[in-house]
Length: 256
Image (cartoon, rainbow, N blue to C red):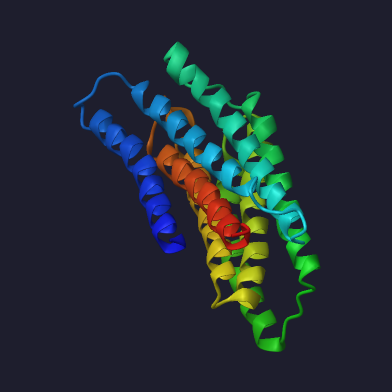
């Protein structure tokens, strides 16, 4: 029964992604002229996935020690939804690109704070200790990511003549935030690798990785973002993966 439920949920989440994605492709291919259709279905996909995530999470007993940690993920997802709703409001109702920096950035930044607390909570809860080889692997991955981000993103942002100081600060905050979340999540996966729990953290790290890709695209198309573009596809996939990870984790702890 549980496997059947997981399969149905997986298919539903795939549909939630594919519908906006196909609409986006239709707009890009000039088959659809109404560009506001994509952000509209983007929001529909987000609110449905958020409702499902909250529903299943609400069924978990609070006696589970990890409940508080995953509550931070739920709250971070809510903040992300609020931020996206503000961002897409301009596209859906005004037919124009959302301002950057804008009010939505307040909630985007709070998302990083809550996601960070979630990871730190579990690292402390599990009292993770790493052997020499694990420390070397984490350090190696961290250095590779750091070099790529500095060379590919941070330096171009700092040198940009088009961005305001506030825009530069926000872009750097998002990229550095992505880096920190990826490394912390990777630390958890290293210790939990091989189990069902590790898969859910893998969805989390994949979601953050997709956000990083989207943030990179955002930096490079900053002045030509428009109502919708390819960066939005990665943002949507990231949101759905976060919601999916909450559902999957909840199913492991719901009382039968």
